Image (cartoon, rainbow over all chains, first blue to last red; front, top):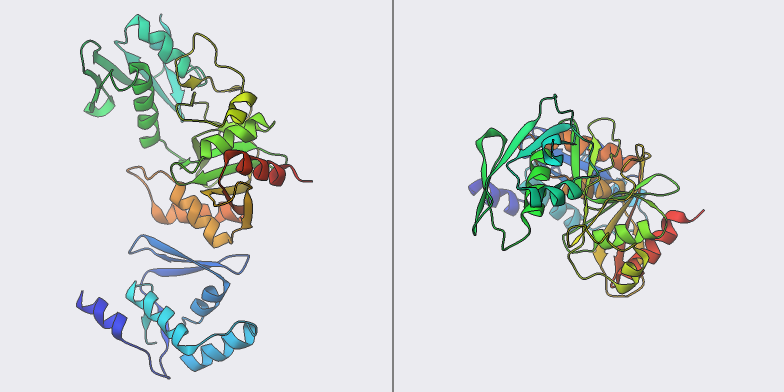
Length: 102
Length: 273
C-alpha cells in the first residue's frame, strides 16, 4: 500500500527514464495497437497505437522530453502534453506494469 | 439399453448418466441428441441421479461432487443437461471454451461475444435464420494452438422474450420437444471454417445497428474476457492464443437498441461482397 501511494504521487523529472516491470511483456500487434502482459499479476492491458508507441520507449534510455519529441513527430495532428504523458506512465507504474529508472 | 445408458461425448469426453427415470430419459436424450453417442464399452465419466422424487433431487458427479437439483425451479432433464455441460467444460482438454455464439459466414466463422443480456443468442439466431449456418448459440470451443472453432450442438435454450420477427424466422419447435428448448439444427455438419470475424455486441441508443472497427488489442482482450476460466486456466497461454486469434479476425463493435437492428447490420457486414 505504501509503495502504491508513493508510485501514484511520484512524478518523473526531466531526466527520468522507465522500463517494463519485472515479468512484463509488450506484445506489439500488426495494426499498431499492443498488449501489455504481466505474468506475475496475470493481468494484461490493451494499448491503442499512441500508448503502444509510448510503451515501446520503456528501454531505460528514453527520457520524457525525448519521448515527447518523438511522439509529437509521429503524431503531429495529436496534441500531446508532457503532463498527460507523465500521468499515463505514472498510472502504469502504479499498476506495476512499468517502473521508473533504467 | 435405454438412451441414457448409451452416453454422450461432450468436448471429447464420454459421459453417462444413471438412475434417470424413464419419463426423464426421453427429454434428456432429446436435449443431448446433437452430441455424438459414446461407445458403450468405452470409458466414460459417470453421473448418477440419486433421488428424483420430492422437492430436491441429488445428482452425484464424477470425482465425488453432489449437486442439489430442485424440480420446482426447472425440469430435472434440463438441470442434468446443464450439469453435464458444466462438467464437460471444467474438464475440457486442449480447448478454450468461449462464452460466444458463432455462425458460418461467407468469409469464415464469425464469433459473437458480449456481456450477459446483450443479446448474443438473439443475434446468433437471427444470423442463422438469415441463412448462415449455426456453429453454436452459447459456447464455442476453440482449439489450443490450432485456434479451430468446433461446433457445439447443444439444444438451443430459448426461454427469454424474443423479437416476434426473429421467432417468425425460426422453424417451430417439435411438439414432443422439451419446453423452452429447440433441437440444435444440422449437428452432423463438418468442422466450421477458420474464425474470420468477431462481433462484440452491446446495447446501443439507436434502433439501427452501428458498427465500429476494433483494434487488434481490444479484440484480443474481449476474446480473452469471453474465455471461461476453468480450474486449469492458464492466463498467459490464453492471452497469446487470443492475440493470434484476433490477428486472423476482422473485429467490430456492434451497438443497437433492437435485435432487428443488430441482426440487419451484422448480416449486411458478414455477407457484403
